Amino acid sequence: MQIAEDVKQFKDDRSRAEQERNKRIQNILAALQSALKKADAKTPAIELNTARALLTYYLLEQGKPKEAIAVGEPFALKDRRSSQAAAAAIYALVAYGQLLSKRERDAADPQALKDDPEYKAEKERMLALARTMVECWPKERAGDLARHEIALHLLRDEKGPEAIEVLSTITPAYPSYIRTQFLLARAALQQAAQEKDKGDPKNYRKRALAALRTLPEPEPTADAETNTEYVQARLLLALELIKDKQLQEADKILAALAPKLGALKLDEGPAKASEKQRKFEDSLTQLALHSSALQANDDFKAAKYEEVAQRLDAVIDKFNADQLPQLKDSGLGPSIIALDLRANVQLNRLERARAAVKALQALQTEKSAAKGDEDATAILAQLVNLITQQVDELRKKGDQDSLQKAQAGFTAILNEVAGAKKKPTPQLAYYLARCYAGMEEHKKAVELLEKNAAEVSGADERLHHAMQLLLVQEYRQLKEFDKARALLEEVLKGKGGKPGWGAKNLDAQKLHVLLLEDREDYVNAARLCDNYINQLVRRLDDNKLKEYYFDFYYHLIYCIVKHGQRQDNADKKTKALRDAAGRLIALEKRQGGFGSDQSKKRFDELLEKEADLRQQYNALKGGK
Image (cartoon, rainbow, N blue to C red; front, side, top):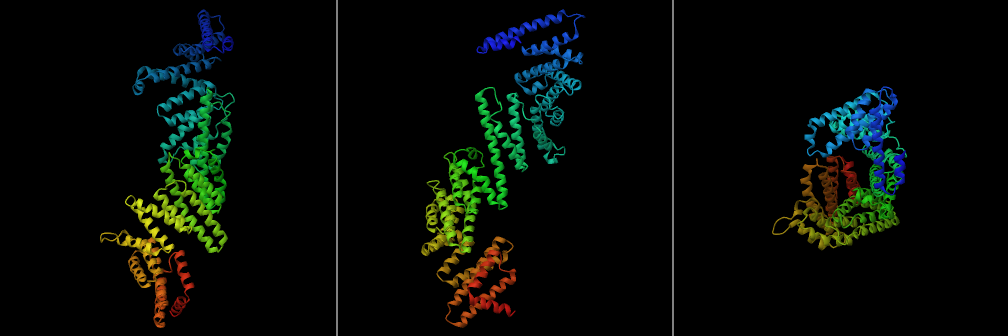
């Protein structure tokens, strides 16, 4: 065709090429209009119909939609059986779309436009043409285009259910089928959300997923808009599957899509195409991370620590190698790092745990320093119990080599977390101190607490109190009893003659008992325990208070035994031991045992260790 030849000839001069193209089209228009004027009864119908269809097309190309409608619409409606009628109807429908779109773009008041008589009339004529096209050419491109246009207007009028029904009848042969199915899916998901409270009775969500699942691959010659919406549709399907916890299917979709992003044409301009590709790759990676986080979380809850590590170790390594910036941007970084860290702690893989700590440090950029501290604090809060639990288990096994290795490894991890910032926040310092305490690194715990306890005083009373109690505990572990007693006295007695905050705090009173025991002041320790036992016995419906009750009771028995064992008089010693044994039996009878498994274990160990107490206990039980 000569127009194509002109474009090829002047490809380096776009302005000249466009001028030549317009010139050729003007000549074609003149020739077609002249031919139609000269036509008479002898002119073959096929020639007339071809001329009308071509004239409609070129008028549309020249930006004359009204003229295109004037030629194409009456021809298509009058001579529907003509082979060119469907094409003319398509051109006329597109022309209507251009007219309406221009009105909508130019409207100062969109709402006023909807009430404009001319706009309403023009829109109704377009829809009437579209309905006729559906009726006349239901399985052809003309019918599909008409359904597409009708659906778009239904959606603009917020008639989602009707639009969904229309879109569902478009055939796969339609060139824009991918785009219409994506449109159907979005409309159906929106409708499902609106009817969620009703239980989505018409299964709109199911229909949306079906449309997304059956989406065909784009043709190699597909335009950028089609390719773009294809990618968006696949990402949307993955997102919805992730919401439904169908994670393996989502992973397959994302894995299949990833290599296609570089091959699909996403924009006419290379720079814009590259930017689109980058954004799609980011979205894909974010979804993959989301899926991995959910699967890892499920595995962790099921104690499948090996599976968690296998899934997330590679993610951590990529992030540490600066190959996964999306982990920082997604908001999933803290939870993914926490899961990987906790799983590797459970597996006693300390090098992998240290890699997770490195990733945690990388999250703590200057831009998000405060948030980084919150994330680190949250992770440490979870790790406190894990580290303590694993160290306790190794102690019970009596495996000193493994215990020493674990302690060294965990200490190294804590040192790295502590060194992530020159000055950790008081909250972070508190959790680090708790971790060090669990690792028997009492000096490091004290150093952190002494530096931060005063700073938080008045700003966060709850944290300050927790730090004070932990510091008393750590002084005691270091056998710095004078410091421990001085600080505890401040906690209990306060200043200005008023009771301190710890006067009614059970944890503070437990430390008071322990310090009295350290001084071998068993009488006063026992009195203090007895006082709190009498207070707590009325509140045993609270499980937490019940644990305190059994704890104070254990120390009461322990103090009675130790006080009795110090007696020179054999009768007094026997009386004390019998008193302790009698109290044990009374507790066991009233409470149906010695409390939780952990509490029962302490009482059993006391009976095992103290032979004279066990003898009295067995004698009294046997005599009953």
